[in-house]
Image (tube, rainbow, N blue to C red; front, side):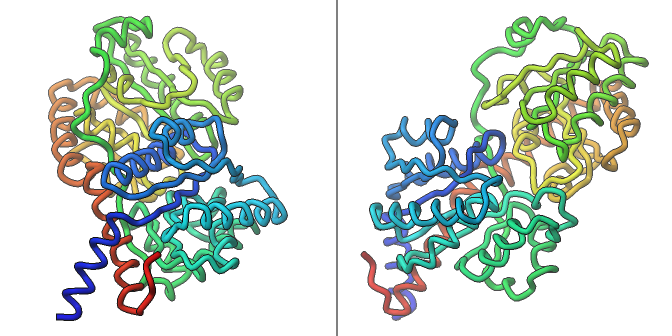
Length: 399
C-alpha cells in the first residue's frame, strides 16, 4: 500500500514540478528538441524555466510562452573559468526558480549543470546526450573539456538520457557503472503537423522546376555532417540524371568551403544553398527524398521529420541513424564517407518513383508509431516522476 501511495504522490508531484532546462546556443535538431520539450512541459502543467544565450530560437520560444528565462551563455568553446562562472549563475537560477529538476542538453550544458550541483541546491540533475563529442571515437574524445564533462555528468546526474541505443551502448562501454541510471529516449517530432505551404508553392519560391526530381539535405554545415560528401554525390547524380535538382539548407563553419566546392564542380543553379533552416518541415514537403550524409550522429531529427512527411531517407549508417531509417523499408542506408555510394542510392530511388513513394509511406507509419513527440514527452515526464518518487520514498521534502 505504501508503494502505491508513493507512486501516486510522485506522479502528482511531477505534474507541478519546477524544471530548469539548460541549453547551448543551438539551432538544428537539438534546438528543436528543447523547444518541443519546453512547449510540452509547459502545456502539461510543469513550471518550466530556461537558461541559455539570448537571441536564438530557444530563447525566443521561451519568451513567446512567457516562461522564466535566464540569460546565461553556455558555450562549447569556453574554458574552465567561463564554465565555472556560468555554473554560479545557473545555481542562482536554480534557487530563483526553486527548481527540483535541472535538465541539461549537450556536453557543454551538462558540464555547467554538473558544476552547479556542487553548490548544493538540492535539485536533481538529468542530462540528455544528443550526440557524440566532436572528433571522438565513440565516447572516447581527445578534447579535455568533453572528457571532464562526461566524468562530472556520470558522477552528478541522477539520470542520463541518450537519444539512441547506439549512444547508450557506447556510453556504457566507457562507463558501465552508470547503466542503472541511463535510459534511451528517442527524439520526437510532431507527426500530425502539416506544412504551412503547398509543395508546389515552395518549389516556386526556390525557383525549382515543378517536375524536376528534388533532393535535399538539412544540416549544420559542419565536418561531421558529411557536407562535401553530399555535394560530390549530387555532382555524380547530375552527370547521369541532369534533370535532378538539389538543395542544401543550413549554416555553419563549412559554408565557404561548401560554396567553393559547388563552384568548382560547376553545380551553380542545380544545387542551391539556402542558409539557415529553423523549421525544415516546409522544405521537406517539396522534396522527393532527404539525404543524411553524417559521419557521426547520435540520432537525426530531420530524418524523423522526413519520415513523418512521407519522404524516404538516404542516410549513412552511423550512430543511431539505423534505429530510425530501416534499410530497404523506409529508406536506404550506405557507408559514411562514400559519396559514390550515396549517389547510387539517390539515383536508385529517383529512377523508381513508385518505390520512392512506397518507402515514404512506410516511413510515415513508422514515425507515427515510434517517433511522435508525444511519446518522447511522456517518457521524459516518466523520468521526472521517478526522480520525485525517489525523493518521496527517501523522505525528501517537496518544496
